[in-house]
Length: 417
Image 1 (tube, rainbow, N blue to C red):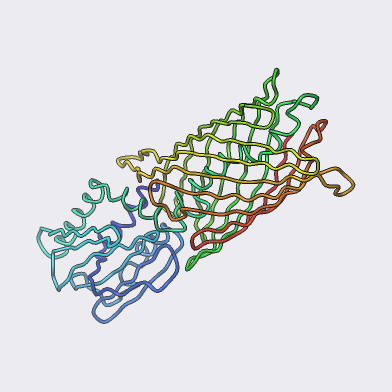
Image 2 (tube, rainbow, N blue to C red):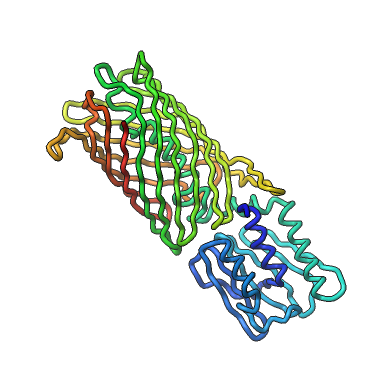
């Protein structure tokens, strides 16, 4: 089942089974991204989940009887549902009412649907069908995903480890600190094309939410110009798996950037990338196009080098169609990412190597997103950038990142050959 269908199934499973909510419904008392609380005359209960499918399964296996055992099908019943940090409520306010009210408070959505048919059961089923048609035709899905991107740390699009932050980092790394594609690209060096592989692990703590972790496999291939090896076409394809509790999200993309030397010390790199994210667990799917221009300037000193990196990029989600549904949250960001790196030659393990200390600041302009700024401090150790005879390159290190309501670390390992 595709993620859009999962979302609609989750909502409709709630309402076809008679789940509803009134303004007096109890609230959820859990930190999970998904959950539901229900109360009927004489009983009440709640359940919390990490995954959208668990949200659906709870009703397929137990229905309302598992949460409000006294519910008979025609009573007033109150339910508050949380679907990836968006609160969804609806309600049959009185006994035998055919009027289904529907509300998403964060979006300012308030609707009512009056069912018709013979008997209260048929009337409530008809009201739920009207709600389903409304969800399909009025852009509610777009609004929900946009709200998540703006307010949820676990948003697959813009949250911690999300598609946009991961793509921004990949675009910047292609120019600023993908060591293997840059070092030895000079007269007298070994100017072979370079394949890059690596593994990054990140773990972040988030206020009032489970920890978020991710694994990224950064794959790249750099093609160096035979006449001037400083001119390089860098093709990259990072693949990322993000975990929020038990829920998994997958995203990746294909990008190309061309490094143009403006002088011996200054390089300009334009690039473009298409990326996508998909998560059955979080019922999310999105495409993203990005274009960027990065600048790197190196101040060479006898004992160390200072590299200044600046990038401006444009990131826009794209329309994605799945079955009868189309979806685009309409997120458009201009991103500024700037960094300073000090590279110092050192002797380690009996070899000439280099240590790098970096500070990177990222700012998001345009559509509001949850992480509108982050600051990163990092250190790496590896092959000396001044070793012009090297045929392969290795770097390892870690960084600490801080942003609104989040903090965490990333372990990095990269090898170019």
